[in-house]
Image (tube, rainbow, N blue to C red; front, top):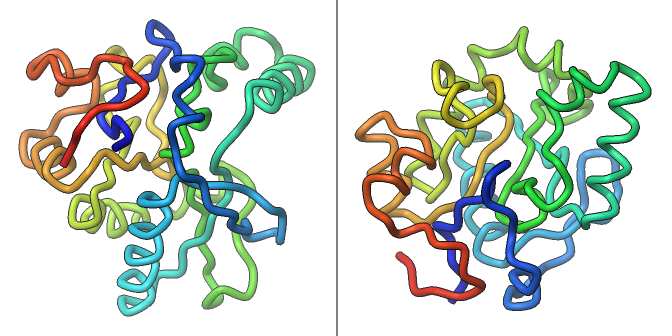
Length: 201
């Protein structure tokens, strides 16, 4: 079983064989581009999406699994477009992105019932109230908000309302109940060693 509790950040690179132990499924993002997600993550995302739609909230996949090369390309693009300092504070160094794990999703939202989806981060931030409603649903489906507000000094990243991560039902509920980020949970429980395979709820 995959290690859904794995901690991936600037200090903890993803193990080189982590992705090899996963069952990946082919999915399509909101722009029709092929992408991949870990199987359980995909199943639970679909359940989250259905519940959101019942509440009049339309979510879609913006970014899922990224190879090391894809992350390198993104980082270099941000450096050219915004400068190295901005890129370093926004884009994870190669090997340290959660997207390498296929357990992380960058969501986008639609304001017209799924006809079109927001593309710019600035527009997503403007609709933070919608994301707050989504965040309330995450633990029920095993997801956490990976980079919450007021945890920047711990996670190393600014608040990203769109970046969610599958960690398993029990873990997600515990993190939400106690107002933790994943780094704090791992520090308190010592259950997040970066191994390729590990039992997990």
